Amino acid sequence: MARVLIASDKFKGSLTAEQVGAAVRAGIRRARPDASVAVVPVADGGDGTVAAALAAGFDAVPLTASGPTGEPVLTAYARRDDLAVVEMADVSGLVRLPEGRLRPMTATSRGTGEVMAAAVAAGCRRIVLGIGGSAGTDGGAGLLEALGARLLDADGQPIGDGGAALARVHAIDLTALRERMDGVEVTVACDVDNPLTGPYGAAAVYGPQKGADPAQVAELDAALGQWAQRLAAELGSDRRDAAGAGAAGGVGFAALAVLGATLRPGIELMLELVGFDAQLAGVDLVVTGEGKLDEQTLHGKAPAGVAAAARAAGVPVVAVCGRNTLPADRLRETGFAAAYSLIEIEPDEQRCLSAGAMLLQQLGIRIAHEHLPGGAGVGAVAAKQPRAKKQNNQEATYETAAPKGPGRRASRGH
Image 1 (cartoon, rainbow, N blue to C red):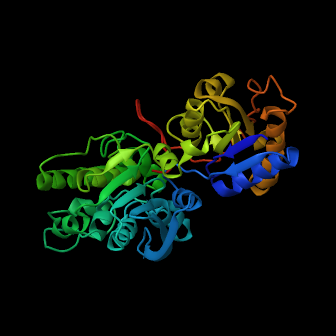
Image 2 (tube, one colour):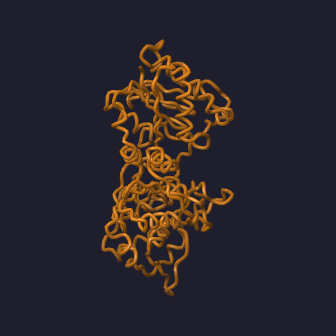
Image 3 (cartoon, rainbow, N blue to C red):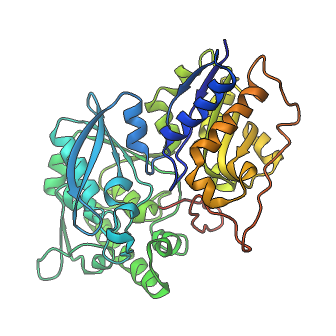
């Protein structure tokens, strides 16, 4: 009996990781009713992180916290024993902006800190924090305030929310935060190595994604520099240039400098949490994927992490996606035997988005015939790549890519 393990990320804006897995499984089972097909949703620290933990057996702990503009939002963290998995995207992310209106200067990370504080109050001593998809550039100040920090202006008043407010930081009191977080281990799922400030920093690289124009980018970068300087005076060390400090609008900086956090690649961390290596035993094929396969996929995104783990275990891997722009040689180098895209069988992008589950079932049938033991087999599958057609001189976008500087890994929504 053939055994298949499906470990896909979401197709952003279309299907959740669980829905992708269910659709591919249906197609495989339709072609090979005898196959054993397991679905393990994965994520890389952005949206879908808590869902992946819940699918792996964690318990959901619902609560209400502040959204990126201060309005209450219903969210949850995932818990197993004393370990909590917190997803920034679901509470302080772009998806939580009212009516989708970007707030580059005032969006806050406070709600993420509120979720962390609730987990600590409930007895969690280890926190995994996924920080992809953030809406703001506040240097993690809101998160720290929710954990007990006091950030005051020259008049002794709270500085307020958002990155612009960091320019007003005059005094910092971390006493209550230190008491609350004493003995709590924080690990951050982070896939970028940007510093906090400068041409490759949080404001310059990711600020435009969050609505900042050039003047606002400059203002935010200067405010982040002020924030780093004040914290350095308080802590005795300056972490603004640490790799990953610029992640999530500077939340990486706050986590490193104040919480003593460890930053780890998101997919590597998530695969550990879901026990992926153990689930590879006896598997004949792994199927992974995300909305768009491109060069960014190869730099810490979920499919590349899944492929690396499967390859280490000697298990072949294929990918499914909305669109693939990677040539065959790049796929082979990363360990993929083949890539199957929706746009290959349905050139209408809108239909790919609206009928993705049905189209994924068709791809599942092909995968079963071409890659499972006893299937028809197609020797040229690895070399055959989808035709990435252009519409109106622009590629269909299934993920949003941020610009990156030399030596900087790209990120989607940090």
